[in-house]
Image (tube, rainbow, N blue to C red; front, side, top):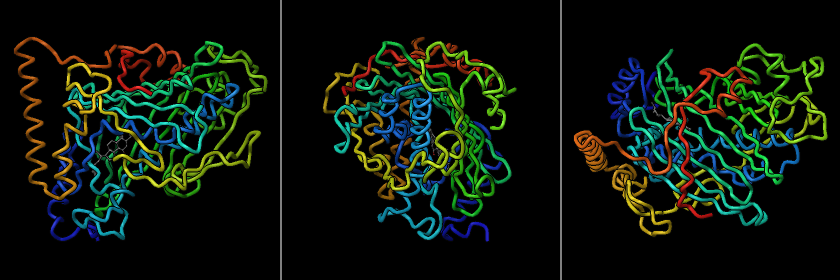
Length: 459
Ligand code: HCR
């Protein structure tokens, strides 16, 4: 019975929401959701999911050669997916004080109260993950800086750094949604560049592209996310091609993936498009190409080889071919996520209040959050949503939105535009173009946000 997970009192609201998304196409900000699926968290907090395994992130820097580094980057990327795409269901679904009982606790609650707050221009989020007590102190601190760099369309830029380990990830993302065969399709736009500074003063760069999402189960009132299509990690002499499939493919399980990690010269010479099948990567030895096409890569004393990895990203995976065949690859099955309200997984997030207000200068150590720091900006809206006081939540939300509209009008009248605090937008990204060529990336060029190297977050 359609809608059976939706309590009678909410059914009308859910049904009209479904009708509105059936004809919907555009950016997420224009998708008005019924209050009972609103989440109290803004999209500016989402890049925190990349940081939730600071130990696996730090381990990238410990890799001794290109091959093990490529595998370490992939392991970290895969390990963050559970948090990014399933954790909020768990935390919201199991929350005792669930505001309204929707959907009932015994049905999948994947997207219940999961429509994030739409960030305002200039919204900020700062956080850090100190080395975990179980790890050695050499793990270093992972810091996060996020700025909402565009409101229409919504674009979020972020920098994740571990200075001790010489790691820096800079990226931006946006989403384009459409509706197809009963599901919402979310295409992620944007990319990330991971820079690893090696002890010999050279740098290795990796381009990371993002998977596509499908939100299924809408008609039944119990939406859940599946990842689809392909993501790539390219750089350091290797290409990782990660294919995502849901129930009924590969192993038949939901949240399945298959990754092929191979030397990039092989991948680029033997494949004709970015969506080549894994079988086209097996010809490394037959195509005489020891000339490593990435000038940044470090010499490896082992012969580069191809690996395939199979599993489900929210649990475990293992090597299915290559020299590590049969060995485990990643394991996040014991992660118990609570959305990052102070805590993510087993790791503590310190939300760093930088102060200084929106547009103004952070003082680098203030106790008070600036007026544009996301948890201060949305405080009253979030409280309303958590306490089930949707009236005050929407009143506060309206106040913020009106203020924003007024600001834009004032700027227009004064002939000025909002100055971003940490990023500058540029038309093209040479690293994206250079590395993207190896996978014949579409589009061949993409705009990007250059970090101004002015993080107020101290490790
Ligand atoms: C699709 C989504 C908003 C965007 C969220 C993104 C893509 C944001 C960037 C992160 O790095 C990864 C990420 C993870 C989220 O899971 C994804 C969200 C899931 C739901 C949300 C929709 C806008 C909610 C729609 C509500 C349904 C019931 C129609």
